[in-house]
Image (cartoon, rainbow, N blue to C red; front, side, top):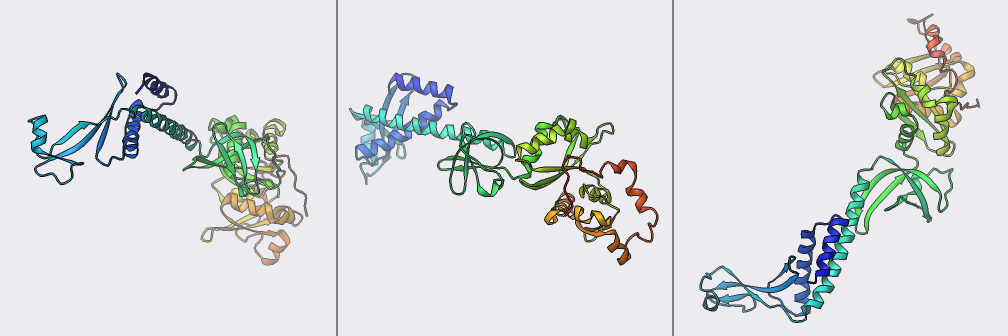
Length: 382
């Protein structure tokens, strides 16, 4: 083994982080295979590499036995004693069988092994880097497209953006810069495979963490997210600090923060509401921008009946039921919306035990700021 190869092994250890001992073991194993293949040898052999002086020797290994049945794998105790009287039955006898032209084969084999191990090590490091970034947001460049997938360059690896994870209203072309959310990292025979998304709710969460310092620092917490990617989303936020306005922090001055996120998501509308552990308040908040007169809760069925003014019914339900659907996802409660007139006809509004109290509760000043969409988007009534 030449000194050049030894120097190369040292360089690989420093640059790629591959252990020199690991490489030497791999080369030794490969040389054993190469020896058997090139010299038609079937016996047990061992290759000894001396990394200090760069020497290489091949040894045939035979079991010391009393009576030889296969002279390729065994040696008699009498013959072993002619070489060294200390041998006993059951010992392993080694004899050097290094071929004269084995150096050329060894060099080629070592090169192949090193190349393979470097490739495996690089793949391993890439996998370790990106598996730690699952559920994180990264910047990428669209490299190519096919009938189903978009392939996004993340630097060291090409990620797959499946059709089901693409915002349908978006169009992509090579060299576009986009933000994507890493959903899964897998090991494959061709190296690490990274899957990304533009529709995952986690992307919206990460964008808010990047855009809103109060969320990144933990002052404001995103509790739940309901998203219909590319169209509309709702998020609920909460803070323990009385002096902090969680909704205002997310909206930003003149809506700058939420507008920046909306632009990144191709104009996706975003409603921001305040989370509450009280389902009455939370469901009412979640139906923003609609006004709410009353929320009646059925704990057993985890369902609610929401009463809204007659002229607000279509706004509460939303186009194609979107506002009510997102509110249900956001809160985790079933929501049945009824107009004030319909509720009175059914005799469920105002409830007999709350007569005179319901309207006063939902008209309090601290709830009045929820009468209009806090994210500057106004949904027209159908």
